[in-house]
Length: 243
Ligand SMILES: [Zn+2]
Picture 1 (cartoon, rainbow, N blue to C red):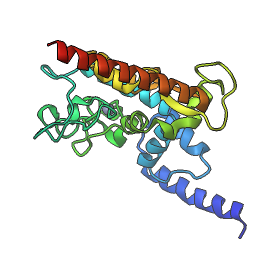
Picture 2 (picture 1 turned 180 degrees about the vertical axis):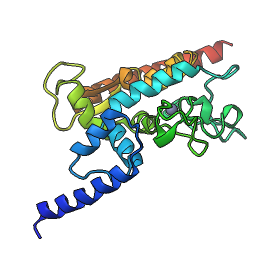
Picture 3 (picture 1 turned 180 degrees about the horizontal axis):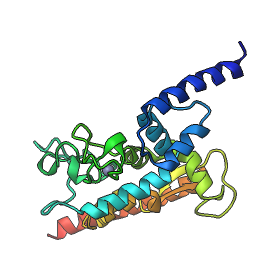
Picture 4 (picture 1 turned 60 degrees about the vertical axis):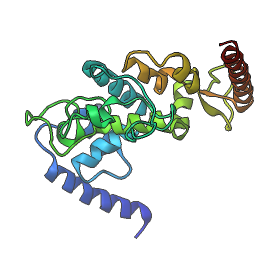
């Protein structure tokens, strides 16, 4: 059997399974996306996963919008792990996520990234009027957003498309070796912007602060940033001596 025939047969079976499992109400864009895949996802849940995986820009925007609906828990501030507080992020590179901390955890049925209820198939709206799914603690969209915030280098192709293949710093053509960069480096976010109210703080990990730039421009930017850190460190040392 030829490869094309094998895929066609596999898709026929997957489609039959998907149709059997599909609820009466299902998000139309997800279904359209699923049917257009080279390999049709055989289950509604996999269709939702696949949809968000290819739409990280939308996922990022949605996750931050959902978080804005929730707001930060009272008394929360962005802190890093120290001593016994093991549920805090170890580094400022990890996105600030109050609802992942034990103290502010919202429990089953609520997303640990944005704090909003999670419904069937990891969807963010209760299209089925069944209420939150007590087994879920992540929106499928928030899973993709979380991946983007933690490992933006895995999304080079998406950023290349968003920037229409132009270097975000010089406007010149993006080379194959272009690299992902945070416009405001995360060490500066931690030092200078850590009091930004959550979830506005998340913008520093999301699309608003991500850019794809050519490697030579990136090397130069990193050198400037290292210089700035050195100058700042020596200034802090001087201040300490003065005190
Ligand atoms: Zn969420």
